[in-house]
Length: 169
Image (tube, rainbow, N blue to C red; front, side, top):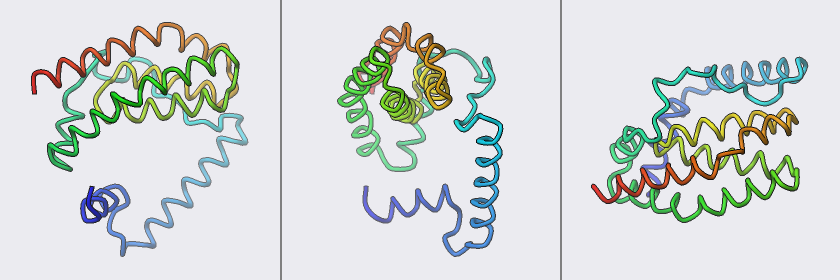
């Protein structure tokens, strides 16, 4: 990604860089919400309500389509390839952390896997990882373990859908 594309992406998410006052206000409001969550004992972001997504699809090509629109086909292909190359390591980290009970690694691996999956439209995998991340962030090992059960199959389905998409493209 060249610096201009990166700045365009940052501007898209943060708004006009010269628009500092509203951005500071948003950050202050987010800090207040975070403090309220900690006081309430829910420091991790709550997952969306079950059934909030349109469906339980394994893959939604709109994620890659948006990536292609924003950054071009070459970058989108690189992101897909990078996810394919590193995701197995993240799954290994996540499953290993689940066995050892390492909540920090478990949380981090779920978070990283969720981000990549969501970007690429791997909805089911992203949703499960979101739930695991939330449980780990709230020290709910048993809930996280329940979310981790069957994750290998969901991961394999996601990779198969991604491979099918890549083969068709």
